[in-house]
Amino acid sequence: MKRFLVTALVACALVLTGINGAQANSYKKEYKLSVVPGQTSGWGMSANYFADLVREKSQGRINIKVYCNSQLMSGMQTSEFLLVRNGIIDFALASTINWSPQVKQLNLPCMPFFIVSAPDRYKAMDAIENGSAGKMLIEAVEKKGVHFIGWGENGFRELTTSKKVAEPSDLKGMKIRVVGSPIFIDTFRALGANPATINWSEAIVGFQQGTVDGQENPTNGINIPSKMCQYHKFHCDWHYVIDPLMLCSNNDVWKSFSPEDQKLLLDCAKEMESYSKALSRLGQDPSYLAYLQKIGKAPEVTDPYGLLKANGMTVVTPSKEQMAEFIKATESVRTKWTQNIGPELVRAAEQDMANAR
Ligand code: X2X
Image (cartoon, rainbow, N blue to C red; front, side, top):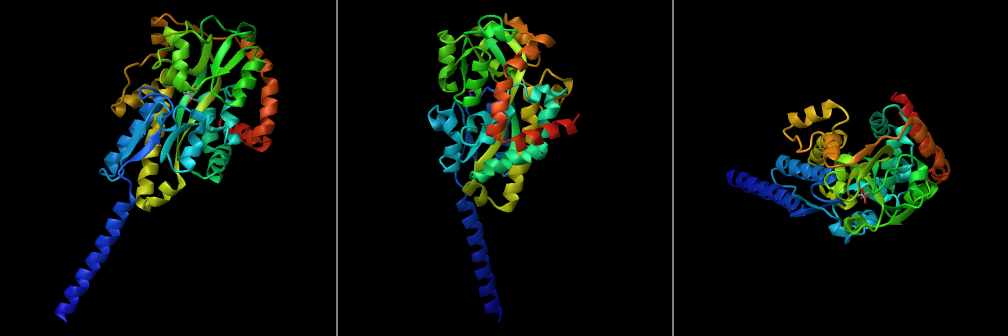
């Protein structure tokens, strides 16, 4: 009997070891996380924050490596979604802009002067993400075969130019670099500019060579770390669209994690959301700097607009009347894209924003 018990215990132990072994073996040695801009962008910093948290909390069992500068898609930022879907990329902290060619609903935050029409534009963005429109955006991504984990933020996109822009007539004929996504072409054409689609991986060289007269990107996340002040002297604070980030993974990769590890990844994503939003919104409200200090992650630049001015940039804030002109000039774009995106989603976003007032 004793011998039988010992044999049974050994057999159980082997089975259990086998299960644990299989679990550990099914995890990759390295998971690749894609980011379009560089390591020092708010976006790159947020991705590294997430990867570090996951490594620490999983005691090294889940090892995510961040690949910046669109490396995993050879610079072609609008093909990232397809590479995540087919498993060449495991994770991405992705801009809705770059995925909008494949998931049309993701054009919502890029409808010109849509979210900024709310009295508090950041509260409006949060309300959409946490509301019924956010649910619809997540469903749209998941229906196309990619798993959603959490939100992050690149930020409201401001215009940097070589000559002053404060109203639509100033943009007439100016060559503006944009992402290769049709809504951006429509918006800049409606404003009288000449949009040029250039991948971000090649854009900086273009700015250095002066091949374009301007570009649009968020202040904290991109314009400051990319040193746009070296190329453009004007920064127009028009907040015309916002660039939320979606942390996502390949479906099979997600399913390969145990339920406990899926929870661990979701918890780390929540912390990353707070960090990413604090980086993006720093300078708008003192609570963001306080939060970053509390978690021991205060960035080098704590007064973004002070830094722009100290570097010789003129910050242009359009008047109410000038903003009204921008809004009027882009009305046809909102009408067309409401149909493309789906009027139901646009109405849901309007309702979410109204509920948050
Ligand atoms: O290409 C851009 O402008 C960037 C870096 O903001 C995006 O990837 C959307």
